[in-house]
Image (tube, rainbow, N blue to C red):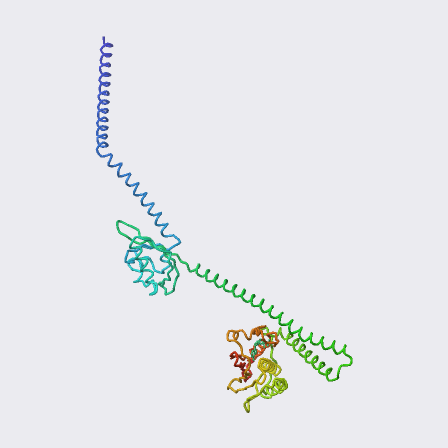
Length: 436
Ligand code: ADP
């Protein structure tokens, strides 16, 4: 019986405990479901709002990133990028725009091209034209401008502009490219091209000179040689020739031989014409005596053409420092030409003048003269004036040699001439010792 009572009491306690646990469980379940309900309610009511915020935040971040990317592209672009309004006032500019102008962005922004004096006066109309085209919605350029930099230097740029709309407002996007290097290269290229063209011209001129020289030299050699050969053969063949005739022929042979010797000597002078090759052996000389001596040597030649050979020389000319051989050579050459290019009964005069620090010597004639367009070339090597009807020879070296000698003495040559009236060839010589 006791056992039964104890068992019953234990069962009651156990059931009580179990019921209590079940009630707890139920309570817990109810609390949880209430919580879920309220959570669901919260989610239903306000959850959408939370999701929207997150998305917007992500979009904003993306926008920021892309802005940053664009800013980097803009900042580090190799060309100067800038924005300005329709009055030309800067709104923004990248690093290269700063580099080109020399102004910091803060100094650029809010100021116009004009205010910053970026354009010279001559460039303003060009800039105004570009602005006018922008105003009607057209892009411009590339146009070349030279900008005044902040440091006072100049910079060559090529500018393109594009009207752009930002928030309903028209602005101008400008792209400025520094073309200093390109211009320098172009200039160098132009220079090189010009040098090449000049070298080409010189080569052509050399070619022309070579042809002239060859034709002149062959004529100059052949004429006396043909004459010498012909007269020698005649003398040898005609044993009974009259003495007077033989003497005349021998005289011609002698003159032609002298002509050949003279030509060969002048040819040997050829290399001397090159600049710097003439090294005068200077000494103090009596120029008047030298002039008189040369004139004396030409008297018979002048007489043959019945020319009036005169001179006008100063008294008491001090000694001058020059190479006597050189001086006689140039005087001979000028006199030779004047006599050669002056008709019978003409006049040839030698004039020496004391000009203070220098002496001037002129040889004048009233011969055939030289066409004006030929005068600038007359002292060139192998340059000859074409004279079709004329029989005078020459290889165009005489005056080139005169010029080289005079310049080696520190003097200058000059020529005045008029066709049909005559010529005046002159040169100056410094009086003193200017060898340094
Ligand atoms: P060349 O030895 O052939 O005479 P030059 O150098 O002495 O060469 O002269 C060059 C050219 O100048 C000649 O072809 C000649 O026609 C012209 N000339 C030189 N001197 C005179 C002068 N006094 N009068 C006219 N022409 C001259």
